[in-house]
Amino acid sequence: MKEGFRQSMAWLHTWSGLVVGWILFAVFVTGTLSYFRPEISQWMRPELRDMQPHPQAAASAIAALQQRAPDSPRWFIRLPDAREPIVRVTWRDPNATGPRRFQNAVLDPATGAEVKARDTRGGDFFYRFHFELSMKPIWGRWVVGCCAMFMLIAIVTGVITHKKIFKDFFTFRPKKGQRSWLDAHNVVGVLALPYHVMITYSGLVTLMFMYMPWGVQANYGQNRAAFFDQALGVSAETPLANRPGALTNIEPLLLTAQRHWDGANPSLITVHNPADANSRIEMRRDNSDRLAHSSQSVVFAGTTGELLAAAGEPMPATRTRDVVYGLHMANFSSSPLRWLFALSGLAGILMIASGLVLWSVKRAPERVKLGRVPFGQRLVEVLNIGVIAGLPITIAVFFHANRLLPIGLAERPTWEVRAFFAAWLLSFVVPLIRPAKAAWKAQFLAAATLFGALPVVNALTTDAHLGVTLASRNWVYAGFDLTCLGIAALLGLIAWHASRTSATQRKPARNKAETPANLPAEAERA
Amino acid sequence: MAAAILGGYALTALATMALAMNLPMSRAEASMAATLLSFPIYTCAMIWVFATRTAKRAWLGIGASAVVLMALIGLQRLVAA
Image (cartoon, rainbow over all chains, first blue to last red; front, top):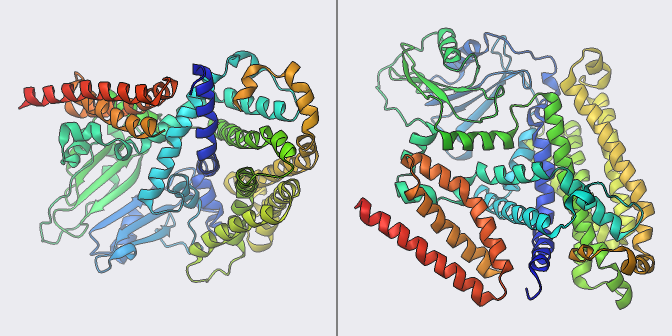
């Protein structure tokens, strides 16, 4: 910290980046996958191939729940939309406690009949992992939040460190070892810079009341519920009448809700105390037509259908939060825009990966001078290979497990997750017993093969394969298989490249010779 | 490092509280706006700590700002009471 401002920023950038880089890599990969959460969930339940949204979906779901869970205190009905054309119902089991107290079912939108689909966590696994890392939620969220804060700082300091931000945007000098890694890191970093800033900040905002509770604390003290009630319009509990009551017809209520929202559809219906005279039907607005992700809702009396409360448009600061939140979730976007988000996410993945590799490459001359690999460098190397080249393997294994595990297996979703982590563990063993270059190549090759094999395994085990889905233009299923092939090609390319270019890393003498003349001072920052 | 991470967080928490109590908006809106601003504030605090020449100066700066913010919060509490 004795040198100039830029040097201290460079130091901060390097070390804050390295410390959280591996977690951020996993967070970025699973976050990018989460843009396609409904599509992944669909693909992982091939039995749902031919489902279609239906105007009667809400009414038939309520009828089905009246059959299955008449005395439940709460029903949740997620209505079908174009991306996930099924009805998902969840209800609270009054007789159970613990994690078993919520029951789920997938319903056919047209009939309300339960669809027997394989049990899986689907895209929700990646979504939860993205901000909880499969840890205890509270711990995972804090870890990811700290990493996100580091990322925000790494981005800002990265920009400060970077003198020639505009020029370097057009600069890529391939096959020059360390120089190329730095160029690559700069290009993907700067290219998607607005996205990186947005996604990191908005990610913090999604959980901001947990990370930074003091603003609410200052004005509300312990009465946090009052704040959420005022700002977000989250409704409070309603008391029971303790008399039986029958639910009114849902159809007119849906129309009333739509009128309140300029024609937008309800996406989630919550029925409180459905069998009681004092029941409530709460509808939440679907946000797929706008940027803001708010929990705008209307509440009806369940027996009479009387409109009891309707949240208006939120106030400016709340609306700002809703838009920032919505930008992170990206539920608003059309398909091309969602892919643009995903590509920006990929740029983020590449930025983190190249930054991590750069740390190692930069220290290659030191390794040669010492004639051995210091422990710290070896650790970074193993972690780099296990995370960067390992995670693609584990994701592919997760999807393979979904297709290959016996359908009737008890706790099938848990076994899919176990397969995921077992594969990841193995990805750390390979770089421990093999030299770095061979391990990089082997892991990327394995990942490419596994992704390439997914459409084949899918064809062998289900009726939702490319032969069927392409012909019927079922883009959710066909898109998944085609994307797997694309990812396989990309990983194959990386594997092929890894087997060639690490050779330049191994010849630090060449890089060294170039250093004095060609490397500008800012290369020092790595 | 400790000055930056913990001191920065404490300072940010105080700044968020002060903002939430003093922004000219409704209580809910002020809390919301202050919380949204807290992350940029934290970032600036961290960068400032790392840009200062010595750890002593960093702690001094954080301490001085914290005292000012606490005075602001205390004053507001007095006015409100």
